[in-house]
Image (cartoon, rainbow, N blue to C red; front, side, top):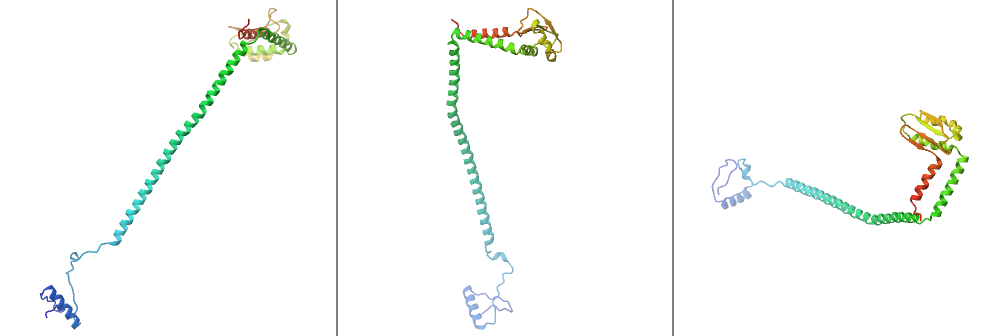
Amino acid sequence: MPILEGSSRKFVKHSSFETAHSLSTTGSKTGAHSIEINNNGDDNNAEQAPDIEQIRLEIEQMQQHARQNAAMEAVRIEKDAYQKGLEEGEKAGLKNVHDKTMPMIEQISRLIEEVKTFRSRSIEGLQPQVVELAISIAKKVVGQELSTKPEIIVSVVKEALTRIDKAGHVTIKVNPAVYDLFMKHKGSLIDLHPDVGFEVDQAVSAKGALVVGTTEEIITDIDELLHNAIEDMRDSVVIH
């Protein structure tokens, strides 16, 4: 039976079944010859096995990428939900504060109006006799204060010097009865206005002085000031 010999490498053509049978039988009987298959170095004719390791790495990369995307999406959803919760909470909180404070503001406004009304009614309800009594008491108190503390007159004049126009000469007209008192405090008066002169005038009240500037005059008479205050009080009260 023809065989493929290892030394001569001569091919004898037979059918595929016959060749396979011959090769199997001969090899088992002789045991001296080996079978050599030569594909002439052409690896393209052989079927290539798939790269399992590469496929596994690609699958792991895809899974890792999917997990990262899922984690990022979860963070975004949580952040959006948190922000929305804050906005809703802020709206609810502002509404709650508004609902609680508005009644308080309205109540305070009503109390203020009630106080104004009460004050107005109280003044209008005063009897003329009560007003006159208050005026009389005020005059007595002022008179007693001036007798024990005549420096009050000088203090009122000092206040006038702070209000009068600083430009030009200022004359302080005083009653002879209080001239020595003003000379005693002359230095402190000049400190308030450097260009100050003093003039004795019998017509000026002993309870004050007349401060005369270049454009205005200021009355510091305590009785006159008290009279003006009394008139303001009377204007606020309905006297029948």
